[in-house]
Length: 76
Image (cartoon, rainbow, N blue to C red; front, side):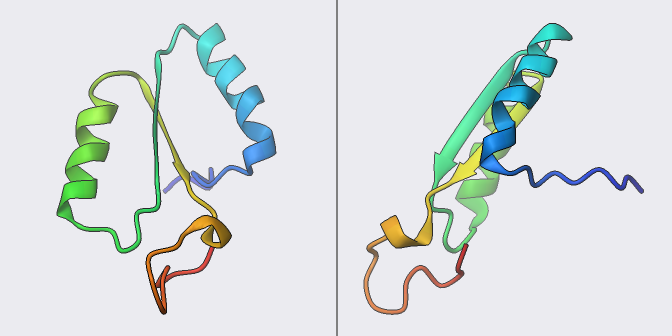
């Protein structure tokens, strides 16, 4: 099992992207709320990952989500 975290602070993303590009990897990004994760999200991630070597998923911060009372269900 890897000890490498897949959760990377936003400020570190440019350096990660730079290193991946130096290695010749194609980067794909998905962005959204993903609250709650459902099978359609998983399919979206899988199809997106198939378009490149590295998939970066960014999530809209909870303070910008306006889906109604009690939403988002999960906090940042």
